[in-house]
Image 1 (tube, rainbow, N blue to C red):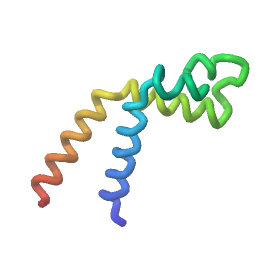
Image 2 (tube, rainbow, N blue to C red; image 1 turned 180 degrees about the vertical axis):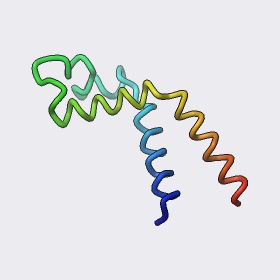
Image 3 (cartoon, rainbow, N blue to C red; image 1 turned 135 degrees about the horizontal axis):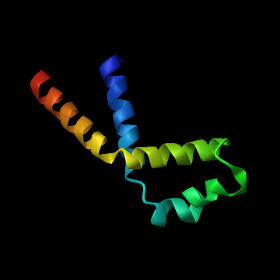
Image 4 (cartoon, helix red, strand yellow; image 1 turned 135 degrees about the vertical axis):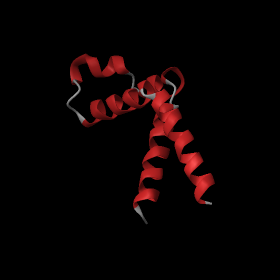
Length: 78
């Protein structure tokens, strides 16, 4: 496994986190942003994961650019 494969894997994980819907998936399981701001706080593992999910959702447009660059590199190197 090379560095490029590792970076592609990270990009796939970031894409998976970016498409999670709060109303359908996160809130029924207790993983909404409002739950973190409650009594538990953001220092727990659950709070850190919810923060990561929301950061990936916030950075959607840079993810689109990274996906486009990755596709172009794959086309050129293939």
